[in-house]
Length: 48
Image 1 (tube, helix red, strand yellow):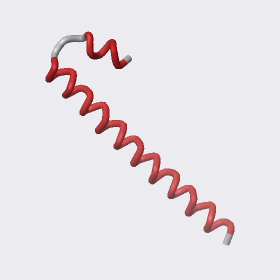
Image 2 (cartoon, helix red, strand yellow; image 1 turned 90 degrees about the vertical axis):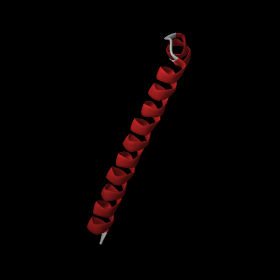
Image 3 (spheres, rainbow, N blue to C red; image 1 turned 180 degrees about the horizontal axis):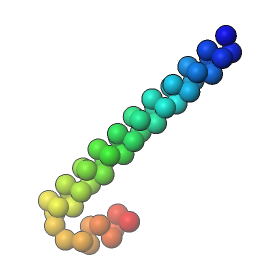
């Protein structure tokens, strides 16, 4: 039973990390679109 619990928790961790990567990817895409929409590199340096 502990083995099953460990495997299940590993699955949840990998699943949640995939979701976090997806959210980060979407977030960076939105920021790139905003920067491209507003134009100029000053907005990029402000965010950095």
